[in-house]
Image (cartoon, rainbow, N blue to C red; front, side, top):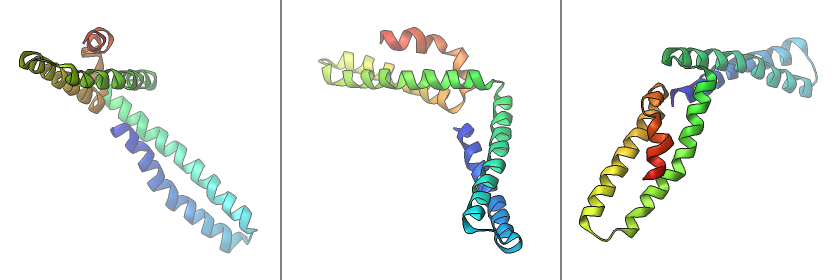
Length: 138
């Protein structure tokens, strides 16, 4: 998911910033090494959090979701995963070709809906009845 890229972006930008602060602390301030490491860690946290927060906020704004809605959608996806696995286990109970064909079609549709919502969470509200009732009944 693109939302998780905000963590990577935050880390990629925070490491060089904190490394520069660490080098400054070592060579210019001439502090104890433990304090220098604390400066590195503190600078990392101080630079990582705003970068990550801003990039994730921008991504959510593009999708038109709030952070609370996004976490709710992610929770629904996590709850749907065991239900999909249970659906896939039904392949072992099939006794006829007609049942296999029907189950295969339903499983393919369920997988497509799940992956679509996982890729673009803003589409969740168009198919939310699938997550609440149809997936349970299948």
